[in-house]
Image 1 (cartoon, rainbow, N blue to C red):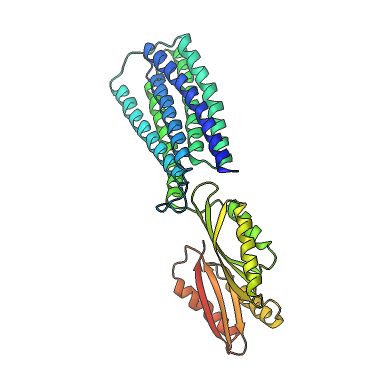
Image 2 (cartoon, rainbow, N blue to C red):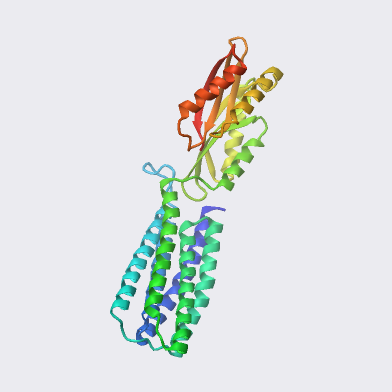
Length: 369
């Protein structure tokens, strides 16, 4: 999906959210104030906050489209993730402020709300609008891979639960004449805080630089593997600089007899194919493997079986054997959680040396990325 089309859809859905929440927040604030309902007033403030959130998304969506420059050579796409952090911080601020007000109203009880038909109707409308709006924003956020839009959807869905809780408290009051609104506000506040913490964790991971989506990584790996001439993929590192803007480097293995011209053509093909997925391959590392030597293949099979018995080793690649110089080279990829890397490699080297006592064993290491 082109960035211009994606940006237009983000803008359209946020405008819908702004208009809907502006109307709802105004109506609920007036009706809630007249009925002395703290929960409804709180909900109206939360709806107005959604107007601010949607406005922020619009601003940051525009800023994230800025062209790359000297200060930001990979563009401004990550500003979307900064926006989602700001939104979740505001959600948390609203949640903690609401919790304070709710606890204060329990300690210092206020006037009993007047649950009239107008208030009930307002909350029923709010429930319907928030439910459909929240689902639409969340679904579109996932489709467009927009963290901020998805966060706005989750927040609107939490507002739908608030409306349900208020309506339930009204029913209980009509039956028992006991108001639980202050306690309900505590629950609402805790729900807002919980949602905010979860969204903040996800957003910060993107800002700091977490791993890309595993399914997206698999697509890129598959594309590289299927290219004629690629014998193996040694490593693939992908950095996310915003949706549709990934920077990557890859190390592949090819037949060691491949000519420089063929290597150049292969590298060009891989870079062109990657661009179709929104990935810029900045470098294609090449290592040669002797693929037509049965004796070398047999040695590699034994080494691979031995290597993968180690639970802290996830992969092995870049195998080369020189029978004249009596040297075996290969690289192992260690898991992040390995306690003592040197000890793990020394143990593996002893095992390989026992299989081929006349050969020098040279093991390089890499960390799973």
